[in-house]
Amino acid sequence: MTEGAADPRMAQIADLVGAPVTRVEALTGGAASATFAVDAVAADGGVWPLILQCAAAGSVPVGGLPKADQAALQQMAHDAGLPVARVVAVLPPGHALGEGFVMERLPGEALAPRWLKAPEYAAARAALTGQCAAFLARLHALPVAGFGHLALPGGSTGAALASMEANYRRFRVDSPIFDLAFAWLKERVGDAPPSALVHGDFRSGNILVTTEGLGAVLDWELAHLGEPQEDLGWLCVNAWRFGVWQQPVGGFGTRDALFAAYEEAGGARVDRARANLWEVWGTLRWGLSCLQLGDDHVSGRVRSVERAAIGRRVSEVELDLVHLIRFGDI
Image 1 (cartoon, rainbow, N blue to C red):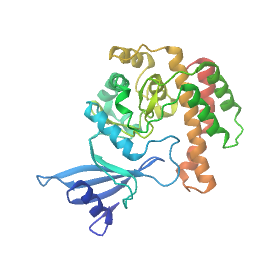
Image 2 (image 1 turned 120 degrees about the vertical axis):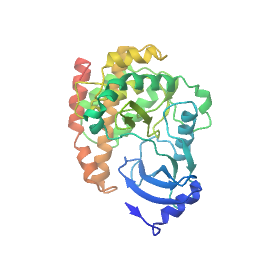
Image 3 (image 1 turned 60 degrees about the vertical axis):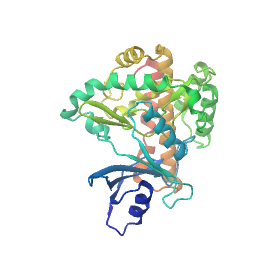
Image 4 (image 1 turned 180 degrees about the vertical axis):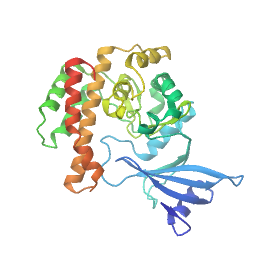
């Protein structure tokens, strides 16, 4: 945490947003972003709560959006009426703070282990499955032609799988279960062209939850053009249940309820076998993220006990893959 006029970031952010800044505090963030809570002074003299998100040092997701495009996409989603924070300013190229943008700070709890278990969020948990399904249905219905000016990845499913496998092979690790998962996916994925805007990282931990349910959707850096059911499968990956494994949808709902609510909200009919494929894909993708984060630490690129600990979770992912491929469920 940094407070006081001595912090140069306060003046730099103030110039961006056109208002005095009284506080800048570093928040916990992911591998792709460094995130700061910012308090600026509103026109009425009150607190104007903001978030500064900058590209983090170290590894970033393969295919991640540039911050300027992420900000533009997020603003377009906000303008379409989706629960997304309004973008206030984008850092110009060469800015002292790096690549990033400032957005409004919305109320809600981001820590999934808290809102998944705390009693005050019981009503929210009951409402979340339907709310998440409705959000995804609305997102996937946005016309893809409107995003042509953004650097959104958009290859076919076959090309995306080949890219993911190439990324895996560069680690030179021996995982028969990962090899099995790639072979299983190759037999089933086909080579479908992208058909919708996909969030790419929609899950517990990347949403703000209020006592009434879904407050806002965060972290758009992995958005791309793809197959809508990818978002449904990713939301069901076991890692995002945070110990509430009996509820496969983010630790708060069932697949049947999610798929039914998605269709009711205007989403395309969900093919259960295809949804299972995307859950396998998502689980394997998380396993590769574990490899990446562990390798960051071991290689010395980013020394971090957290990344080292996540790297050790590869064995958990292998067990999840066996269950999904053998039984179609976890």
